[in-house]
Length: 135
Image (cartoon, rainbow, N blue to C red; front, top):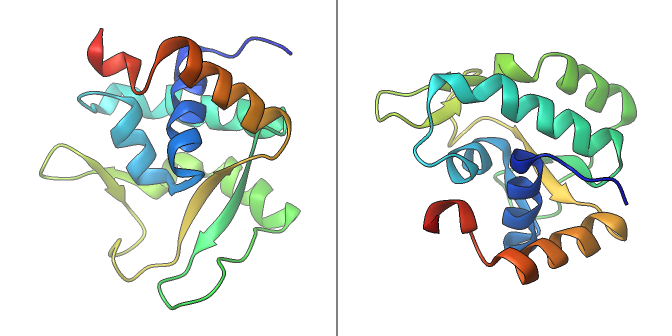
């Protein structure tokens, strides 16, 4: 299995604990504290993880029920414009730049079965939970 960069490792480890999370919560989790310099690195890490089929996307729907997976064309369009989804909020955390985060259908990332889950489990086992905060 190919090595992934530090931010990709943090994303997978965070997903190992939750299995899925929206892209805004994740960026605020893997960077401590978050800053405007993080966005390009974060989006590149997500693209890399998706390219290696370690993660997938779905839409977070606020009503009860399953969150539908993104089609290949939706995923491609999302990855092409991923940075456009983010805005640094007044509280210093990243949030949705395409509408109110509590009412907008937003992308969420979930861990891929197989290699994604195995690698995430190994990362948490070897490094511990949120090792980047405790360093």
